[in-house]
Image (cartoon, rainbow, N blue to C red):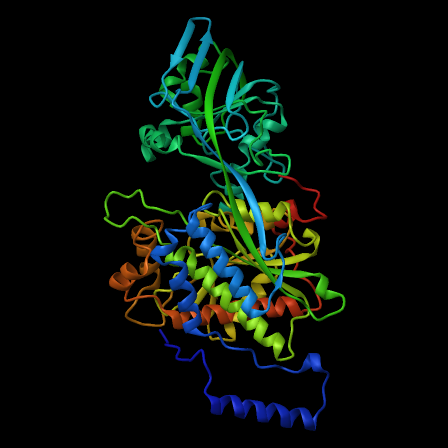
Length: 570
């Protein structure tokens, strides 16, 4: 492979030469100021390093949402915005404080009883079923008839309606896991996440996911039980309601198929019929069951407060300055360690996502420097360090529903989450590049630095639906999420192997810290962190200065279902 050698910082002699040439050409052939190619500022590797090392220090204790460490991190980000001269763009200065409700199950175990013609069947918590806390109400109870709804999927785009022919109004639905095989991975991930929403829209009052023999072979039910009862968190609206938790669903459970047989006794199809259809690759039928269920669970609430931190560079164009490009990077991580295989007690989150915030802060400094030199962007630029990404993209989702600027005026989102800066990358990946013309913009920006834009190397992971930008995509805003590619400029390194090793051994573990990354990988490549910053700056500048705002491509599934003028709503 051809190596690429370059420096992220020009020499003083080179800068002077370029400047003199630009002045000479301008004098010989006058042009409009907007047409003059200006020299972009260069990212400073030491600045990226300083931000990252502060945010990933032990003093931050893993930056868990609502923790003192995260508050300190947020204050640091706000003061950096202040030093740079960014305008306050929160609801309280740079801050947009978000109220959350965290819920966990009480010591009183949940109950699940099934009533059939053969009698009453008591299901045992953690042996036959598992469930999570309810953030909508302290005590949830429901008794209702059961209806089997196949996979529980609905999509006009893909011609799927598993609810056709069944009435689930005031019923508890049972759906088998999966059902999106054969669909594009990103679209499949989106549809799979909508199952409970589809049930609620049709009047269901409970939702049961049925574990299957096929799933058992991949992940045994007893393993699912280990993670089923963890705390759940939702942001609260001004009325104190937990967003995303529909109070209509009184019952929820993940059910082992070996405990489900009595529910299907005397029904139109047996449980064996269902599993035979699944094994044959067929969609199972939907039908009412001759059974009712009673479900109850008791939750304990805790209120948490945590901020998004938002700054702005105001645009220069009289009209376009009222449109916004927004950079996002989550400032939270997962806090203190629960990993008993290591003596470390802190999940520092150096790459996830102190690195992303460090890149965003240095990008903001570059914009501020460029504006101070007389080259402000035409559109305004927002920089948002969002909270509670690790809890389910919650801080970004709150901003998407309660934006500090009109949501319709946000034209694009560039998301920065966990750049793996452990090798001299020769390419980048932009999740979402195939959905809007932002892909072309990313390719041009990377090309200016002799870096290639590569296709998604792991489409089965559906990463486009798994970070903060997706909350803005759901509001119809085109977005890209950049990742370091798998190709290294060092012929002796395999970037994909390094990336995969980090994900397997360090991601969401105490090993994502400065010391371990140095011992295992030779340390963070801050020079390539600066390069990553330069590329992100170029992306935003092209978006901000273009006459036309970014647009969804006609074939984009997400453009079709989320764009403001879309008639499709999967």
